[in-house]
Length: 406
Image (cartoon, rainbow, N blue to C red; front, side, top):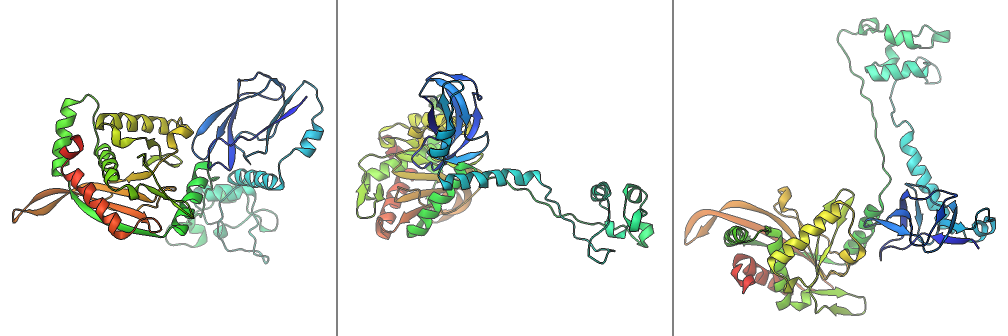
């Protein structure tokens, strides 16, 4: 008996999916456990295996097209089986059909010409009489077609008129340039849709406030150099920040919390989300129990996440369960920025780059290395004094890294 295979919910935030690739075509025999398709979620592209045996009788979502969770992905059954009743009674909800229409319209749009040229006319109805080929050649050569005299019927401009046209024919004394306005459009990816929805919810529902502190990085730089001469795996400044944050959270557990509407959850475990930029947007894999891990363990884990993120191989278990998030843009030359709280966390730390500046030490102006960090807080959970106390502790760990190794 034929069975409907529905679009699976492959992550906690997934509302719809895109079929990146079909590994079977209509008429193929499918065995349980065989790879049926690759589904692009809001986080990654994941393999989807069949849960039953049968012949693929119907494909409900074409490659590169999207559909809501639980809509018809495919139908499996016996060869030649009538599936009209299933399609009529078990199909997508109206919202799914509307979504499919939007997808078709969005993907069809880039195939249409998006070039528009503003021009005058030698016709009473405001249109230029010219063959399509003449218009195309004029556009490619940057010729203002309104300056060209047509030799065709009723003054229609044809190919030879464009090819024989010179600026002197129009009475121009110098060369002129006609600009062409154009644009391209791309369908919003599943990842970008989720980023937009989740961060909009966070920004507009959670009252944010921000605390910024400058940190002296001289000791951290010396410690990192010393550590990396002893270890085969190199430790980054971001790894040191992850470790320092996890230890500061031990001392300030109320920062390691979540707003749940009618209650606040204070997490006893410390899981640090590390924001990573990828081609389509942003992923936040989680270093679990970071306070119990060494710098080298954190470094190896973050490097592994970075490789998997670029290859779109992160799994749901990799990005779920964060209790605090770090976003570092220092490697891009950004000195200071504010980040939007990453739900369900109550706080996120924005880390800027290390910069050389003059500082005062022992009443003398000397070269120094400073780094700004900004703590974004959900004011429903964290108050200003609590956030400031956390930053003081974090600053102490960063400026005296030996404390992290004790």
